[in-house]
Image 1 (tube, one colour):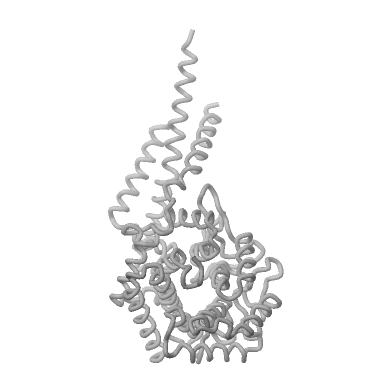
Image 2 (cartoon, chains in turn green, red; image 1 turned 30 degrees about the horizontal axis):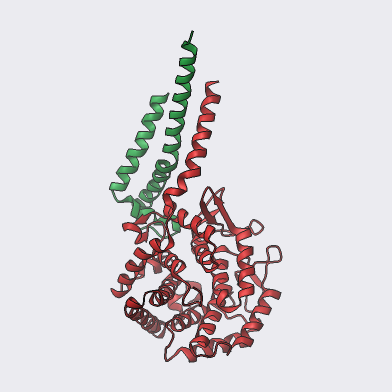
Length: 83
Length: 358
């Protein structure tokens, strides 16, 4: 389960980086109601916005949560191993 | 047990990250303004087209020019060494706008439903405000008197922007133009009586009874057609500081109470109060559900926050801008908006000297 989550988080970050390198950041004007130049620009803009917020908000929270969970799990395991 | 542990870890991670995220997006207002100013000055010096704005709404073309002039007028006062450059850009904008109106009439800057209008306070007021911000223009006095005559003729002291539509935004822009023109002429109280009557009428007849906020649109007789709208009231409150400080402060306090939101160092503004079920239009832009954060209202809220030196609200709005505005080229533009939004932000951050404040 954890591997699946880590894989998903890495995919989000890579997806964001790919969109950024493709110049999709310049397409997010759709968020202000500005008419997009094309349907492709609209799709890129929306995808970039979603990827950005996922990368900036969701990924760090999920990463921190996994770290905390791992630490707690290890601490509990060590405690169970003590005589 | 595992599930509970994971939920608690997720809650702790959320609290830590959300609580500290704003630190990464805090910026000093001057640092945000500088790249915007340079980019926009160069754009107007190159006569960069505003056609992209016109495709969405021809009103945005005129508003972009107005906010550019207001921003450049303030920057000329803040940066005397660059004043000549800013003033040259202002003169170019005013000349081009006069030419466009002379060639096409006010409809050039109006939505299609206003194309049969023979006059528009939206156009007249913004052009007069540009000239008043420049401080001197051969046509300024005539344009001011024309606006004054229109207001005096109107049954409710409200000039029309479209046939039988009076926008408070446009009327306050016109009043600000009158006051700035009077100051520039050395007669600051020349139209004080008209302004006092306008303010008295606004307090008595143009206020939403639930929120106490000025409505955004009326008919020519002064009957409300739309309620208090964020993308209108913030700028109205800010410009009212030039016209009537008491009403301005009252409206800003009410707008903050009804429209402002904040969370963990980020701030935003709603388009409509909870008591007024309005929808988004082309000027307000989209709204993020649940929190009700609206792009147009939030951008103009920054104008008001700075006008009233509300530092906490300013800092929160700037942080939100950095998070959700998608700055490009080191902050020279914001991808989530458009050139009008960039100019509104620039004006918000550099206003003060022109309006008679520090």
